[in-house]
Amino acid sequence: MAEYKLMKGNEVIAEAAIRCGCDAYFGYPITPQSEILETLTLRQPWLETGMVVLQAESEVAAINMVYGGAACGKKVMTSSSSPGISLKQEGITYLAGAELPCLVVNVVRGGPGLGTIQPAQSDYFQAVKGGGHGDYKLIVLAPASVQEMNDFVDLGFELSFKYRNPAMILSDGIIGQMMEKVKLSPVKPRWTDEEVIKLNGSWATTGKTADRPRNIATSLELDSARQEQFNHKLQAKYKEIQEKEVRFEKIACDDAEYLFVAYGSSSRICQKAIDLAREKGIKVGLLRPITLFPYPTKAIQEMAEKVKGILAVEMSAGQMVEDVRLAVNGKVKVEHFGRFGGMIPSPNEVVKALEDLIIKG
Amino acid sequence: MAKVKGAIKVDVEKCKGCGLCVVACPSKVIDLAREVNGKGYNYAYMANPDACIGCANCAIVCPDSVIEVYKVKAEMA
Image 1: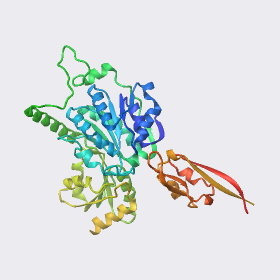
Image 2: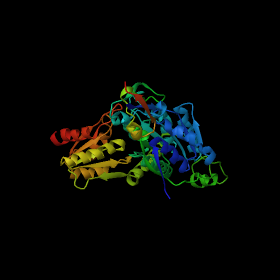
Image 3: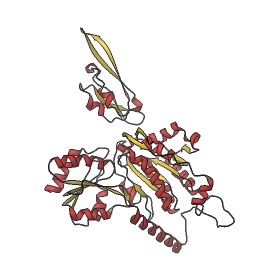
Image 4: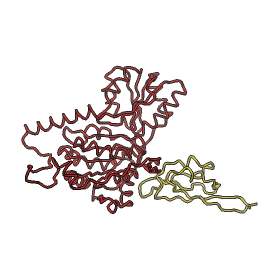
């Protein structure tokens, strides 16, 4: 029988990590994600599954510990909030450059700089467009509920190992702190050493045997021609991800004349705004990107053929709206509405923005 | 005749300052403190303790169960 619990978004990340057979967590406390590390230390999974939980001396140390664990072919993860994720960017681009799988959780808070501890969605560019240096992409999942915080831990590991690419859960201070009912995942045992060699032995540093060359986890290639070849390989991988892994959700889109595009907690606010707008006779739907990379460009293109205008609702000064505009390519009007710096838009504000910016504007 | 007076006790370190109790309180007893807890959140506190009726609406609505409600009998002057 399925196990249901009332849990905080951050707590469920920790629980899901233990249940999906994660080998190690390296982190450093920062509000609003500290409960991930706190829950892991409280649960003591090293007694139960042998999972390593370590509070590193800094965020930089944590991400480099992840690099080491990932190079061994293990399921490793880290988590932080915006300023900490900025510190981790060097490690993340090295992981992408060395094609190592791992899971990074970002419980976003308002910025720039130290900013505030209240929720925001202003790390979209950092997560989706790069953040670190070089032509790399992360697989970015955007949960909109505590249930999805649980589900995306396993999914994130699955995708990151499938494509040997770091995956990120781009959450925010609302979902991280929110208490909701969650159906916990079934317990999966950790990979044994034999399984790690069988699954990841072709690239991981599992111990050289006589029948294969040495596996080296590095992102360094001083021969530019070979580095270009490697970049072509990466780009082909990202193209494959874009073709196969796009995930999105459509809500009330069948008869919609207008469209909200929003991810994460903004999409939850938009769902209430849809109800309010429909009471007023405004037929509006919601397209919620679940994967931010790969972005559901085609789905937005298709919706742009049907609707009169699109409002991108984000808790930022306008980041994802750029990808909506690229997808729509001038076919219909696209505007942005957002509160930021830790403020959260109310459903009424969203409806008013739809009326003012799209319908009247 | 005795009037029932209430009081609340907030587990300051567990409070995340969501403000649901501030809205739920029918007699405007609770507000968020200017000070912050260890995590940096402005925690809930009794800004107007005399008005508390001990209805426990705040404790029921609190998602993290950080509020305890007490009732005391106060003699009418």
